[in-house]
Length: 217
Image 1 (cartoon, rainbow, N blue to C red):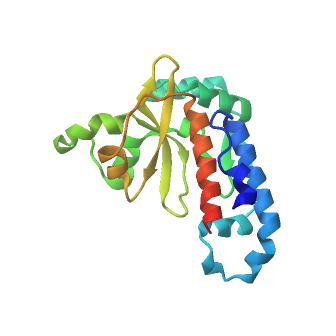
Image 2: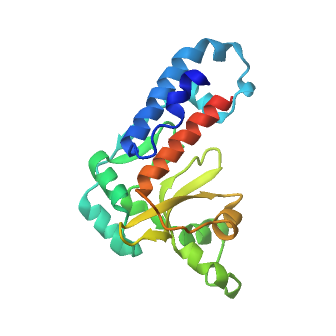
Image 3: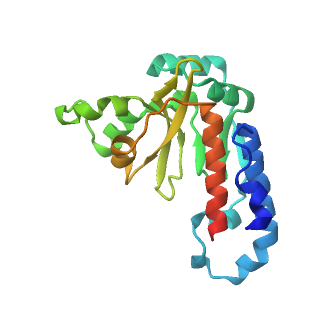
């Protein structure tokens, strides 16, 4: 663990690209130093993330250039102003995908409201009177990235408009997990105003969580 300590936390203000670079350096180092040990163990001794490190070429991928008009059209379609940290990132780098798809940014034209996902995938009717108390919390979530669909844990990452910092235009990111979505997003969700750059903090946390999970095994 100690040899990887510098990879685990980084600096919370390091920026999205630097977080991704740190994660990539960790994976390269981990694969190089643990390959022989991995080969000697049974596959079921490792969890999915470690399996994927060896089964796939796990690295950051940037695909599909995004234009300003793509962003503006989507903002008008779903009535949102995306956080500047997000628009700057995708305009400069394109759409981000990590490895085999544990995190995969959607093209702006594919971004949807969580209420549409719930209606189509879970037959959840947000306009049902019994859901009146939950309506605001659900309507405020915008799905901008797939999660680890293959393992069916995190299905989407969402911008939370209830965390909007009006002075910066930034929002926090929340996870939509299929099995625990109601507790996560309705019962236990905090809607504190976003401090700092929402997308940068999201990728910082994502990279830390991925590294920590690998090192736990």
